Image 1 (tube, rainbow, N blue to C red):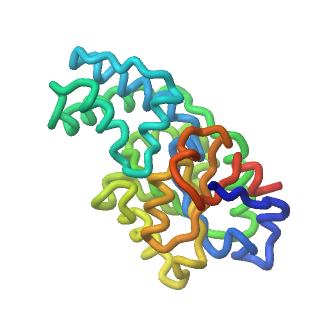
Image 2 (cartoon, rainbow, N blue to C red):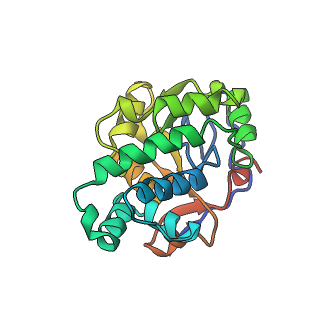
Image 3 (cartoon, rainbow, N blue to C red):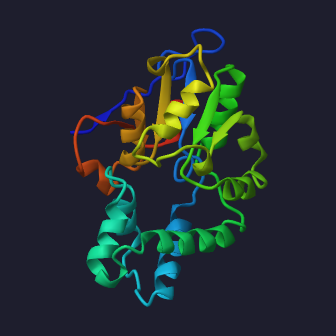
Amino acid sequence: MVDAIDSKSILGCQGAGSSPVIGKLVLFDFDGLLVDTEKLHHLAYQEALLKWGCPLDINFQTYISLAHHSSGTGLKDFIYITFPKLQGKWSEIRADKLQIYSTLVETRIELMPYAEMLILHLKEKNIPSCVVTNSLKKDIDSIKAHHPCLNLIPHWLTRETYNQPKPHPDGYLAALKLYPHISAHEALGLEDTLKGVEALKSAGIPAILICDPHHPQLAERGSVKFLPSLQSLIA
């Protein structure tokens, strides 16, 4: 069972620097939450695997169900089962994928719906924010160059800045250290994947999953609060 949230006045402000649900700090994921890059990740994996002679013949819905799995290894596990000869080659596959993705992301990437409105709203209400992402800084910088509003988010923790990726909590624990006067339970994390939610929960941070109500990951397991889009946070 996945719990939807009543979004009415969810960001109604109780005074500068806080709101009833958002609290004192917002921690954002990036890909698929603020920017529409998931299809590029899918394409990059397909092109990378073709280099290994292993066509990844799955549609986008299947891809995201694997890539967003709470274990953080759903896609890797699927690839190893489908292509046994690739066992133990994940680091090399990832390196190929990242190189291809970096080229793809140089094209103009669109923001997710209502992302800019939410960023501006938080800025207006003096609620601090931070991005914690598994993406690399150079790719983030390419996207930020096209969307100046992203520069209103003061802190960015990219994959180079912490040890273990999501679903491990390392990135979010590092983010909390940037705000020593704000405790974990006073913050709110926004993620579009269950593995990201797992990272938030492990860091002690309240989480909301932002995804389509028909996303296959919602069938994976219970009691995850979700909203269907960022619009719900500013309604």
